[in-house]
Image (spheres, rainbow, N blue to C red):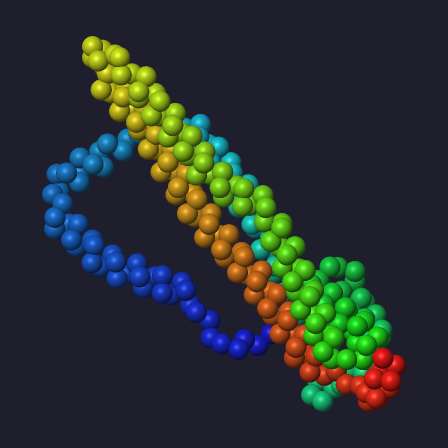
Length: 268
């Protein structure tokens, strides 16, 4: 059973494509009008195999690719885990029939039922429900169950944040490596300052400056893409926790019932 959303999706990709059409429809005609055809052809003629290789295959760029691919694999694993966790919504962990109530005495049987359904696999939703049922069996108060669900949500959220440590480092390392290439290129250009009599002086300096700008360009481009992917995965994890809370709200908290509340008060 899927969790019903309380609001419409934002359709971000639709607005992104519309933005591309609007910006492209304005800038492309202006570019063709103001840019002479000869200069455009000369610009693209510069991008031969040697220039592309120098742009994409420097040592700093290769290190950036390594960090980017490593980050991508880690994010893919997290996203797949998020999809696996969502399978719990369709396992029927709690009764969803209209009018069903959950009594304090139902806590242990329902917990055993959840264990048999999940077959020992770790699910965030199953853990929340079992902790809530255990608390309800002891305190017989729905408010205590709600507090347990909120606390467990915070625990899972903190666990997700702490596991992002290596990804945070890699997202920082990529532009840092690019700036190392920038420093190397600038240092190489400055080292040629005493060779003005060399006929290849200008070419040597521009090549070194090209290294500086190429490293920065590739690193920042990869960083932009990586940060977007991180945002997508983080949002998927946050929505998972929100949906788990909503599931517990609809199928657990609103169905809790103690036929003898005065007994619980006397025990306290």
